[in-house]
Length: 386
Image (cartoon, rainbow, N blue to C red):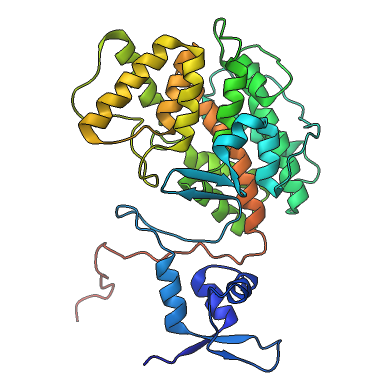
């Protein structure tokens, strides 16, 4: 039998958690030490095989994707269709609290009605794309922050408020709007081209809350990796936005918008994969989609009916359930807003999650260093003929 003993610090390193977390596992009976030193400073010893087995059991297989497991208290994604922010069911939280209050909960667990302070902004270049506008706004918030380099949780939260407000305001400034008020009001003023429904701003506010975090999504992992290097909060958010910008992540609602628009014009597609359906974690319906599609029912009967027909069609064809991208697309159409609205809402909302994970990563060592399997050319000789 393998009786190799390892220290508490080594166990924490194998599990990818803090030493304090290992102590917590022991106190809760999740992990049993193989040997306890008489000196409390020396800590406990653990069987290596027990720690390796625990690390393996915490890995969820997701259809061949690279898997990384770390401890987090920010959010929990359950395959059964539940998303929690610090223990709060997001489906209830986002419909009860403003996005600003949801962000405060994501950051430290407490809803807060404090005044969010913005930062000075000039008019952005009108050629900037939706993602570029958010990156530009983060940079503007950074250069006007005298405490930019601080890594304290308080400063991370302050930087998050400044950047989120700047991004929402920049969307409007790019079109000549200078709307104030909630983040949702500023976003709506920046994207609306006509007269949206009276409840459009409230609907966007709910969508922002639903999208504030989603555990270790690709963009969140990028943000945490940046935070682990000691990057400042603005750099952490920038890293997250850069990874979020692809059409398979933050911009995925655009393809779902095109699908729904085509369905409104003339019928349902009959073959090929459909954007807006299926999820790598949820076994069935994405809970965020459920909330958004309920909102659509109250906003526009026609869009709601077309979306329902599409969902039933895809259920029968593939068994796949709708995800948040379809919900965002349907909400965008129901409010009469342009195609890129979903990407803007997604990107601005997720800044809150990047800040939360940046705070949580403080205190950890530089730890995001996976190894690669080299598949290139073999070593080449540099010496001449013998």
